[in-house]
Image (cartoon, rainbow over all chains, first blue to last red):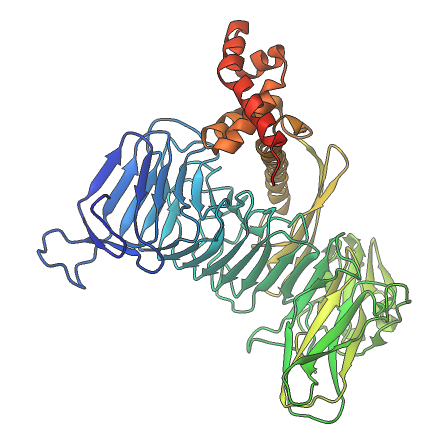
Length: 470
Length: 157
């Protein structure tokens, strides 16, 4: 690359098939201000033009060693293969240096060959540099030969289209690279090849945010592993699924998971136009009042009232015998309350401080049985199953003891109140406790958006909330 | 296999799929509640649980190895690697690979760490003879330990 300078254009013939029998470093002199342009083209054309781009050039090394691509550049239509030899372990295809580089790959294929071995993968960005890298992939695919193959990212990474291809797929696709932090945006990526036993994002032990939007998932794969620290990888999923839905949204945090639910929905609540849904806030043991499970500004409403208080309401329910308190979960809001400036003012619906005692939320009588399954005589029910009965319309009942329902509906269903239990032969069901939580914004001074954030501080609990902010 | 007990709860959805939450317990009694996943209609949830338990066990092993490698590459002889989930051979193999891709500083620290291991331990870990261990100490480990000591002794100003 000695005759090439920053900003130069490099044409790579479509029949270019380069293999080096050692570790290989390709150092582009390009800088973020003047990246090199590297394009695969139809070599039969003497003056390649816009219609002559192809995707068949190959650059590989054939030994158990790294293939290291450095510098700032744009590449089109090239397959990069690291460690395409006989045997080896822990070899990488690296796009890691220098720090602060910008790299964009379009219609490329990034592979670890047969001598990549256990622990091999693709590394983007350097964890040792002074500045993070920015890497952009468009219609580019990952491919490995071992289930231990992974993609490690440091810096700002975006991937549009593309996915994982080949015949052997990684157990966990995105894993961490020691040190560093990263923001990963995955838009329209096809993860269908990551099936049963596969996970898209590992429990990454340094600061990372993964955003998945409009991606194709496999019906059997997991999105991510449990974040093991409050500052570790958080994963945000927006409209991704393995089938034709448009309501599947999830957030994976240290304190738990927020996910869409289509079986426990408020009858007059949120819907995507076809499918009613609620949001289930599922906390784990890490949720605390001082560190709740939350998705900031998850609820939104346009406010046209100024000079008067505005009260926001969110409806919910949970599987328990009593109403939750306002330190189990509560509603916070931000609004334009500063005269002359758009500075946010804040309102909270929780208790005054850590040592204060929480008070019960307000009971509600909204119907939540629209999508629940009717109780079946003799039905076999597992813990957590949900049913409804015509004799007590509007309520849903959670199975709290697995078993087989009676041959006819016990009378206890008709008279059950929220939180009340019903023995149904060998099964036991409990009527869900319905509630509403409110927060009052004191006199917004400007017309504009009001954002509400439900926060759940009660550990190891599940609350279903109607996303329709009243 | 560090996972000794597994269980799950599931929540059926309107389209028949189920949100499944698994809890696994390891041999030390620590519990791991995995993020819920959406199981396809008719999915074998018990079989999935077995697969996830195995994957979690592998993750515990790899996490411990990664933590050990990080500690050794940063702290050298001051590192105290653990073998709660991973084995000595697994860590030795990882150390070999980490050394191949190590920066100069990391290589010094790894050599410093190994220099404080007994001859017997080095022989067992790397399949070396006593003479080979002596040669390794002379050529790499002792110089690395000396370099690490110089780094630790260095002061600014």
